[in-house]
Length: 256
Image (cartoon, rainbow, N blue to C red; front, side, top):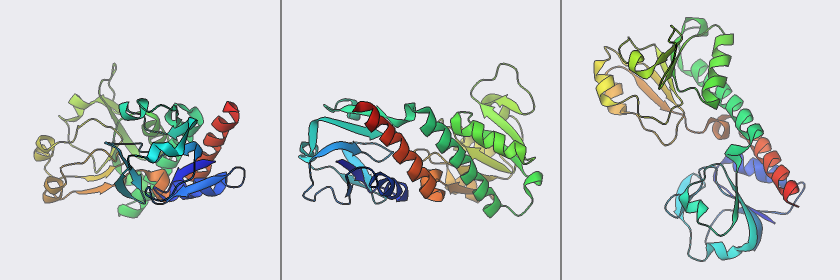
């Protein structure tokens, strides 16, 4: 049996897909009388200070929670930290799965496109975008926006050969900011000092849940921050849930 934390709509969809081929248990309350699990699908945000995300809120795990896992239980998550590494169970990091990463990056890019269409008053070809970060999601966002003739500047920590489209963060900070900033970087590049130098703050789409912008200062300078968070779970939960279930099933079958 696989236990699945009901942390968001994506997990509900994953549970629905997995239940067609294996025994599942949806964890709605960590204090319930839980069964014994052969597998455990943690929230994609993992564990932080003995807390997990459950129905969009962080809750404490009871002391006896891990007694509900068999000794050979396999745990799935997309966020592995020291706390998870110290557990006496095998952990599968879904972020190491190329299928999981590429599929979620595509869904993230499509979610960004949806937010742009919903929050701008001009055509996409008239938009100028600064894209912070160029990891898996950043690359998918860049490719999608360029295909739609959006003017995009990619901002990275370091760039060997800078162009008008690809530049380092130090160069970017010396230039006028674009109409829209999309943040995919965990690094604190948009701080209060930078905002103070902007004559007018832009629209900022922040898709990094762990990072918060200086929103009050941005708003005071005419800008707006949308903390979109995990877009696959928010905007494409059915597709994201199916992808998650397929990746988990692949690992379960591989381990048998």
